[in-house]
Image 1 (cartoon, rainbow, N blue to C red):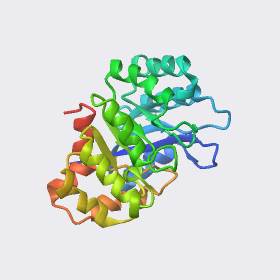
Image 2 (cartoon, rainbow, N blue to C red):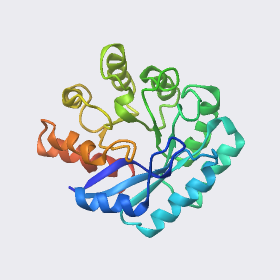
Image 3 (cartoon, one colour):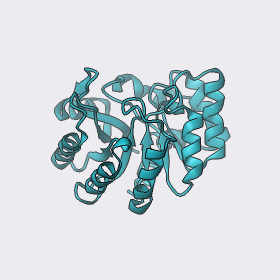
Image 4 (spheres, rainbow, N blue to C red):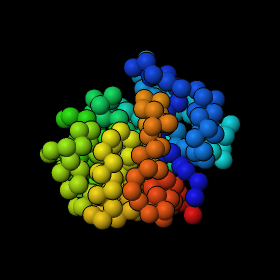
Length: 249
């Protein structure tokens, strides 16, 4: 089963990191990553529409390898709703990415909940940058997921960042109580966290993602590849689950 990276970014972020399409594809070739979900960064001018257009152009250049996800700022209300509609219906994107920390908008806040009405109508998954204090902790993602059980959510970085203490228990509880929440693996430095989740929630909701270029794609792909899992479980995390979620098979 070929590898699919569920979390990469294109462009130059307001925080200084970035990558080009050429750099991403070269690295994917080298690491034997067949496909990737590509997402806009938060640019210096905070205008996400041109970044969505740039990602769409990248997908057109490598349509067999890249899957576009839209990015909007929920605080912009109707403007965000219209941009999401445009990205899905006209640019061909397959999902929505929200970064509550960079948009300074808690994931369980009213603007996000209002945006979910469009998400429901479009029948797309929502990926959330998880683990940010006060805006996207696992308990907050759980609030949103329980309010919208018909929507599929993907929590990045294991749904939390510390991978210890209360944050760890909240992430596990979020997954147990909300079957519509998937988990993406970027930044999960504890190998046992991934391994221990399999008997608790099953393999079907775990997705490999690197959060490249903010995180090292070279390192992140080793997490599922080196985890103590069966070949079928490893294949599920590295691509099968993602393709099923996206409706590719």
